[in-house]
Every structure is written in structure tokens, then in C-alpha cells.
Length: 292
Image (cartoon, rainbow, N blue to C red; front, side, top):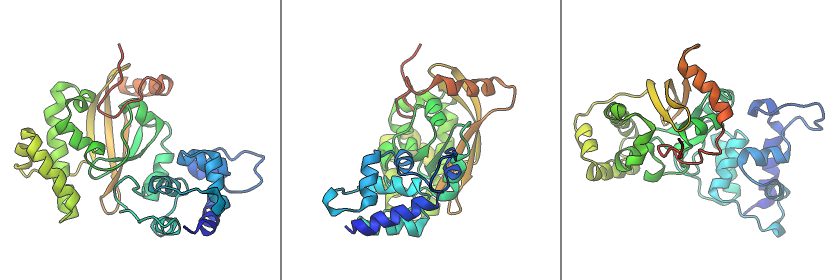
């Protein structure tokens, strides 16, 4: 592991990021135009001491950043694809696929938009409905979502294999969402072509869910771009919202955000989300926290 080069690379990337670009206040007492070390650590979910050791690049520190840590740093520092790969090479870690997985690299354009939606529930997901990053309001609205890759991280997979995943929507809406999820997955599978991950996921769902198998055999296909949802919130009740999808150029990632017409009950409930907080909602999407 080339720790000196890794540390130097992190420092130069930190220096070029302006606080406003990542939603941080500029302030009047900054001695450098870029981010502070502790700010990068906060954005990446690391301790300030650990990140400082990474930047120092001393072999004596014994730091060995994992693939997940590197992916978090790539997101925090807004690295493009080449820079992300370079970071992994310096750390002597296998470069993960860009589109999905525990070290998935969120496309900078989508991440930049997400940062600007501080008053709107929003998240970036893969085309297999694995959450890559989400803001606080999305966690408050949906209960949070497991990060990573594979069936446990895919909401579509959990929808057809775990009854608790359906508690986020009213029972009368379940059949509709099943059709939408399968039609969207049909489009993703065709777009990916001979993708072993998708083939394994579909085969597993066909074995475990008769509903999925029947819907898959209809061959209905429709990329989800906009939808109207009724979300069951444990404290605020049923919230009616519009869900918009902005797809990346290759279709493998999308930014989701939730909104409601001004003056509507849904808009009022969205305003309440910011004061509800997430202390009682530390659960995964589809598993609402216990409440009244």
C-alpha cells in the first residue's frame, strides 16, 4: 500500500472542494479554501483521527482502509471515475464495479443534486434498488435503508421475500407496487444484458415468490420515472407524495426525491419530518419503527 501517495492524493482532492459544494457553511475564519480534515471525515463517516492518519501517509500508523472506507472517501471528495479507481489502486484494493455494490461510486452529478435537496427526502439507488446514499429526511420518511449489495440490500428482493418490507405501503397498494417493481426490473435486466448478478437475483425470486414469477412471465416493462405513493409513516400516518426519478446516463443509478403539491396535506407532513427526527426510526426501509 502506497500510503505516502495515498495521503498526498487525499490532500490535493480535499483542497479543491469548496464547502458550499457539499452543503457546508463557508465561514469567515477559514485559512484554506478547501475542506478541513474533520469535515472530510464527517462527510465520509470516519473519525477525524483516522482520516488524519490517512493523510499523513505514515507506514507506522498501520491504517489499512477498507473498500467501503475508500468508497466513502470517493463520495465525500466528489471523485470522478478515474480518480476513484486511482484511489483504490493506491490503497492496493480491487477496483469495484462503478454501478453497484458495497463500494459503489455514486455518480458526482447525482450526488451534487442530492446535496442540494436538503429540505426534500432524497436518495441515490442502483437499478436493482440498492441504496447508495440518502439524506436525513429520506431516512426519517422511509426508516433508512441497508447499504451494500446483494439480495439483503435490494428493496425489490425484500419486497417479494420479506412481508415486513410491504408495511411501508398500505395493503391495497401492494399489487400495484409489485407490478411496478417487476416492470422496472425487466428494463434493468435487459439493459445489463448477460449480467450474472441480475440472473441470479431473478432466478432466486422466481423460486421464492409465485407472485414475482407470474408477473415476470407477463414481460411487462416500464422504467419507473415518476410515481404517486402513499407511504405509511409510524408517527405521521399515511403520507401521499409524488416520487420523481432522475436516471444517470447509463441508467444504472437514479436519484429519487419525494415532494407534494403546495398546500396539500402531504406538504404539511413533509414539513413535520424535519422535527420528527430519526431517533425512533433507526430501522431499514420496509421495517417501520414501533410507534403508536
